[in-house]
Length: 178
Image (spheres, rainbow, N blue to C red):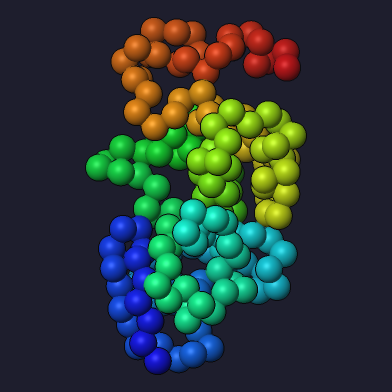
């Protein structure tokens, strides 16, 4: 069967078997390996992509079900060579360790910030609750999303560079004691 969808802004059309999962379509047919395939049971969330702006576990979605939809993978977060604030936040706040869950976490965070630009800790934790990270203990992931919320797309790094915390809204001493 033939499927057509928009992936990271580009229209793609491919012939596929009807049973192909979206995660395999993205990785094998499109060569976008940032979407990870983890547990194969929809429990871990490493395979999260955005479909029409909403996080979906691509190991539970047939590629045929994505026909006509817009898909965004981690490769589609950066724009014109500039990291998305979520990507930058994960770097700034060390929100990744092994990196296996990171693409799904980033996409879930982007969807959260798109619908709620200023989430509190509880809202961030609720948003990522369907994803498992075995390395970080989640504190750095939450801080990464908070950093991204404080630096929306288009924020001026030149203006913020002169502040002790890069414009994140607190001091380094406050973070250490928090």
